View 1: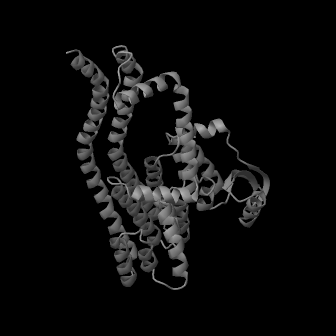
View 2: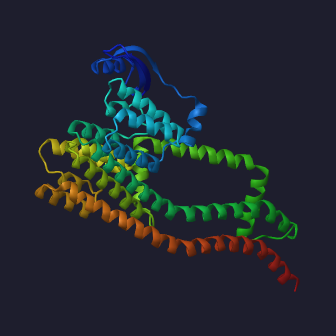
View 3: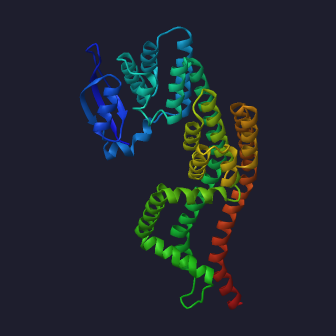
Length: 401
C-alpha cells in the first residue's frame, strides 16, 4: 500500500504534517477529510533504489520498540501529556529513524489526530498488531496498560528471535567455513597435485570429478557467480509469491532437525499475539487475522483465513483450526477449553509460555548436538578432498613397486 506525506489544516487553522497509508491519493484525501482536516498537499513517498538497499542500517529493532513502549507508559502514568511524552522520547531516541517518526507522530497528535491513526503512517516501524492495540487502549481509556502489554509482547518476541538465532548461528558459520575451505582447496591445492599425476594415468572417478571442478572453477569462476546470483533471484521471487511462501513454509515445517523448532516458534508468536489482542477487547475475527500475520507463516495465515469463514457462520474457533492440520492438538485443545470457560486470553498466554520455554530448551539441545556434527561434517569434506587427491599417487607408487 502506498505511503503519502501530507500537510493539512485543522479546524483551528493550524498546519500539521505527517504520513499515512492509502490505496491511492483520493482515498488518502478522503481519509483526512473524515478526520476533520483540510488537505493542503498530498504527495506519495517514493524511496530511491539506493535508500531501499541500505534501509536496514536504521531499522527499528524489537528491543528499541519495546523500550519506547515501556518509557511511554511510564511517562503517561506519571501524568505527562501524550504529545509532550512523544516529543521527549523522540529527541532522546538513539535510533534516528524511530526518533524522527516519534516526533512526527507527536506533531500529528498535537494537531488533533488520534495516536493510533498517526501510527498507521509508519507501518515499517509499528505493526498492525501494535496499531490495533493502541486504538483499543485509546477507546477503552487504558493506553498505559496497553503499552505495558506491548512492551512485554515485544520483549517475549525478541527473546524468541534471539533463541532461534542462537540455534542457527553456529551451523551457518561452520557451513560457510566449510564452503570457504572447499573452494580454497579447489583453487590452490588441486592444481598443485595435478602436476604429480602421470599424463597417461587413469584417474579414479572421484579424483577426475574434483580435477574437473577445480579447472572449471578457476577458468569459469564468473559463471559460478552468475549461477549463484540467478538461483538467489529465482528463489527469492518464488518465495515472495503466495504459492512460494506456502510451499517454503511446508518445507521448513518438515525439516528433520529444525522443523519442530520453527513450528513451535510460530505457535508461540501466534498464541501470545492472539492473547494480547483478545485481552484488550479486539474482536475475535480481527484478532485472529492480526495474530496470523504476526506469526510469520503463510500456512497459519491461510488456515486462519479459512477458519474466519467458518467462525462467521457460527462455528467454534477451535474446530476450523483443528481441521487445518497446522495447529498442534495442544493449541486447539486450549482454545476449546478457553471458549468454554470464557478465559481464552489466559489459556493462550499459557500456550505461548509453554512453547517459548520449549524453544529455549530445544535451542540449547540443538547447540550441543550440532557442534560435534558440524565438526564431523567439515572433517568429512576435508578427508574426501584429501583422499581423492592422494589416491592416484598411491596407485602410481603401487604400480611402480
